[in-house]
Length: 237
Image (tube, rainbow, N blue to C red; front, top):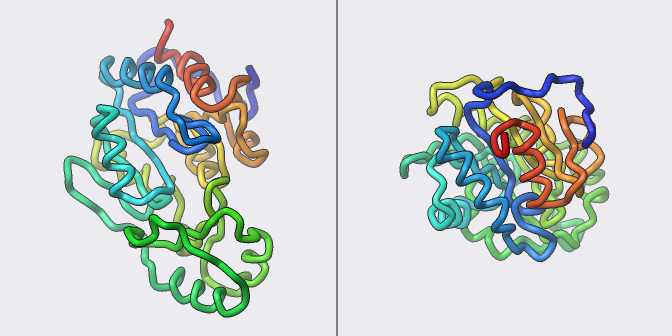
């Protein structure tokens, strides 16, 4: 167990919602969900604490996953660009700049898009084989964010990130972001882990995400989620 940010461990009752990433966090490097972590989050939800799925993936996939896993809280898709709750959808991201930047980029390098981009509304998702640092260099003068999840390279509008979506989810739930614990692993999780009340990085997390966290789990992926939930006093107390 590693404590980093100096934020105190929450007391029982402090955390009102958990925002959790999917790829690399609830799922491993083969994209297999950790059913133990899913079960632990169901226990959290059954105790009256909302579970918010926060993903870089598109709304149809994130929504389907939420339904089959049985979570009831708002969901955040497209790295904060879209929020959905009770089949109502809020589009927070503007696709104009990302699309313009991508048109410029594909004239410079090979930049194949993800299969799922046929459903993507607010950003561009490219295959992970695309050179991240080269993309950042080529788009340095553009008003966009370029981040990686380890599964894809994303071009988003400036200032767009999962924390934007989590803030909207909190508005819908009637709670403060300071009452939310965020769990993740990648670049696109860093802001919500830093800015929410408590942030948990799983053991396989990127360096920046680890530095942003209140707590870094020793275990990876789903096992790290369970370890984080224990540290948050949400299970096993």
